Image (cartoon, rainbow, N blue to C red):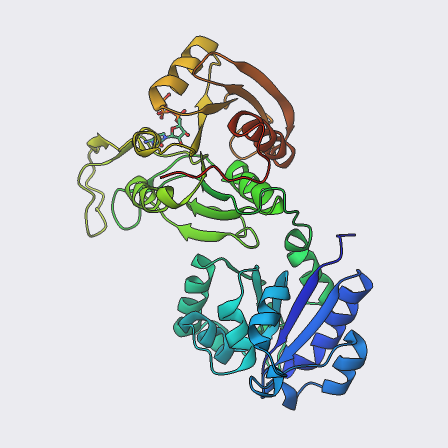
Length: 408
Ligand code: CTP
């Protein structure tokens, strides 16, 4: 069981609002303190009094009634360690994406700095409407985590995607945020993950076998230590880590643009992405037709993102690179750490079966430009992510826990 957290449970105008009581009950059973805030339309579906009995707190709704002599929305925002909006209606999702603040719940969300998780519930056509999908994309980039709706019978009587998941599923999805410690609180971590895809034409691309699992494991581990995490990721099948700001990219040059934009505002940067070293010189705009002949495709070299970042590195920033090798030669790895300008290089042997690219396991060796070599062992990527962050911490700021070194 996670340590007790103050959870603000936002309820919005969806017919599933009555199910928020079951979510509150489960969270209370787990030992969390629940403060409910309902929108006006949520109160049409939600029994307010039951909510107050279940949680032991008033269910707030109106921005002005809730003032109570103080600035209640700021107080509620500051007190909350996680905000869960379940169900999140189409209207509320739009409001959140646009930054509107015309009721208590939307105002709290604007003032809050804790993780925000939303569980949309609506008719399938509304959920897949481009307006809602665009809003969800905007929210993901702002570190709002979505618990996607499930398929099942909807309020209209039709079957489709749009049902609020079970309280157990919701609890499971927010567990990483509930488990967060504050050991790395105030530290901003930038992680790149996954492969890059270089287009040949609109249909075909040149890619690589990276699954993104190692980078995502590092992002989750940093989040669980209380860091603010930004993830720049190539195409993967992994759900975005709860609480991370996520930027999805395809090509190496898109990754470069995102990493350079984000790097100055982060303290630690881990470049775990498998960046394609080459791109197609002249991708065609329309699909290239078969012509009965062999194709010659000219490739040109992509920028080395990691080396570029190392040149921009300011005092106090810490840079970690990965090395995907088919032969682990230590002198070559030390050379790579040096010429890439990293503080630490984490090397893995991608030729061995059972570890590396799409596997859940890995075998990492830490190398520094000064010649230090440390085997982090063979384990699951999640466990290795923890070991890697411990070793990064030891070398980055051994004497100043919880102090982010200031960089100019
Ligand atoms: N990397 C990068 N930009 C590239 C290629 C790699 O930022 N264009 C980063 C990777 O994210 C990784 C590190 O550089 O952190 C080392 O990647 P690796 O593929 O091992 O090395 P390469 O530079 O591609 O060199 P080579 O494949 O020739 O060994």
